[in-house]
Image (cartoon, rainbow, N blue to C red; front, side, top):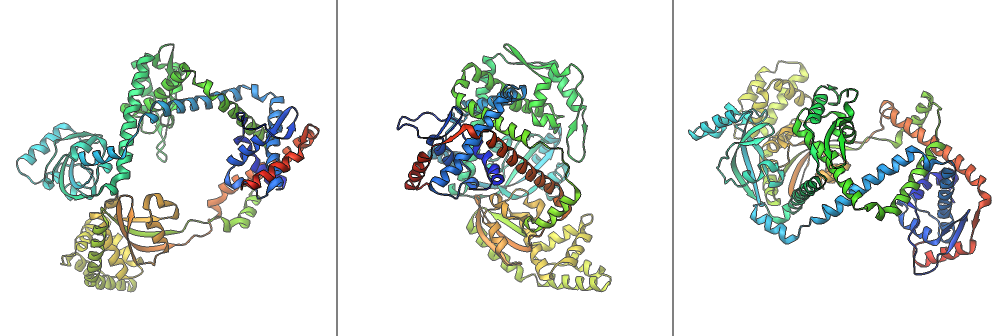
Length: 638
């Protein structure tokens, strides 16, 4: 059997997982132990074995395994008995915590039944929507963003006189990144990437068509479709399913909320909502975190925001229930505040009242019993491990020296990625990149000369002028010229040249970055120029590209490989291996680890004393324990 301190750490996970099970009609329960008047049976044991966390599973077999798990069940019974003896189950804190947990569970249960269970999407529906809504289209667009409807009408009038879209965009658009590019957004978009607000209008446009002004959060937006690609159903199926699911869930949730609001006669209180907005807007914002702190005047907390049959939702209650309002983030806009109130406060309250009306809590009596036991066990552990003992600086230093190799940074690889709609397009671009690399000799030679002069401390004015004047069809040269003209652009490029491993690698990186900025489908690729730092834990976002980049040779091209509905190619720029974190980085974590170790030791000693004090009330049924052990081995469960 594990030693006491080890098992005491594991036992909490097992304790809170167990509860009284419904009686089985197959055969009579086999008693394994008795604590006072409470019997622990093979049914409790089988439930524990089936539900114990993977890391906490016993390495024993047969009767030894049963005894090891049985100790956890006995500990559970002893801790609950001690808690009830101390009347913890009657304390206001216990009652409040269980009631809060039950409210959350009832809201979630009813939302699943009334909303989520009512939404289903078949394969046939998805294929029909794919065809009807033209999900095969991936479009490249240009846009004009203006702050007011009047300005939008002016821009549209200019377009109707025949002025090219790119000129109107440069003159009118307030978009910081695309206005200077004639409004052109570099990547292609599928319906999944477009905001619901503009999606239907945008994808109803043919290539060359221009939209009417559309109201958007930034003001008004005018679109023009420049080009399109065709994608397959298989490429977009996952994104189509996510989009349809969200749309239908949102629609069902709104319809359900509206029906409950009507049923319970919910009405907003304009006066109270006005006071809430005054409080939120008067808050003081922390520039570092974006959070606001604000004061609620005496009595204002009870101001009603909403009234319903038999009650009200008060201002103070609403702020407590909404994390966004509580932190004061993005709360100056009344429309956003209304959204947060609906999501975090109104909808849960309506569902809770409906659950209460339906007496849904009667169906959760067994769950409530298990939750009560869980709260009691955790509370008893907190009491048993409570200590005022300080952790000294020397303890932290000693712990760091002992464990520094166990906590290391993640391996990191830097890449330039270009994402395209299909494998064929990625293969074609890969061949094009090879040709572009082959034509980069003039740029490479110039970068070599600049680096040599940097090393010698010589003037580089002539070489910079040549870089500006290089005349070739290579788009990367135009891209470099644009970068040179930006504020601080020259200094940035000279720094890149100075720190590059080689001029050849830097020239190839520039080519990849220019292509990523103008052709990559990944949202945000134009701003990042396709440059990403990848870690092993980012597979969900970058797919197989992560493993390939972590294992590939520095400087090599990798891909194409499928990433979501698209295909990616990338150039590996550099790699940084894992290393031990510094003392300063780990100090806070070390203090938490030391505190946890102390708590485990304190709980282990407390549990040992508890077992001793109740030893006379614990009885084992040894023959039954061995019998169950043999049955588990025969069943292949150890």
